[in-house]
Length: 97
Ligand SMILES: [Zn+2]
Image (cartoon, rainbow, N blue to C red; front, top):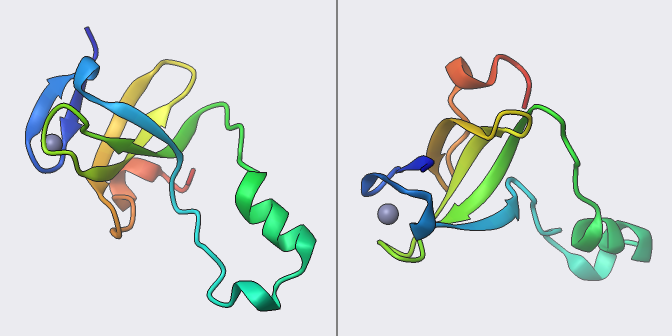
């Protein structure tokens, strides 16, 4: 079983977590001023990375909090987890994210 490190609770089995999509998607600060294409890109366009990818996860059967993770999509290995609002650990990204 895959073990995921919750930054608040520690290591827990993957069954306690839910995937929340790509991390670091910023909502436009003034939605009324963006074009329809920019708004559509914000809502729907996501990376489909092969390799290290920044994702949001939620510890639904634990603390209930959201956090971010760097996961290698080719091996399903979690490289690092970090709290929402924080930058990915530089030592874990290797410049990939
Ligand atoms: Zn937790």
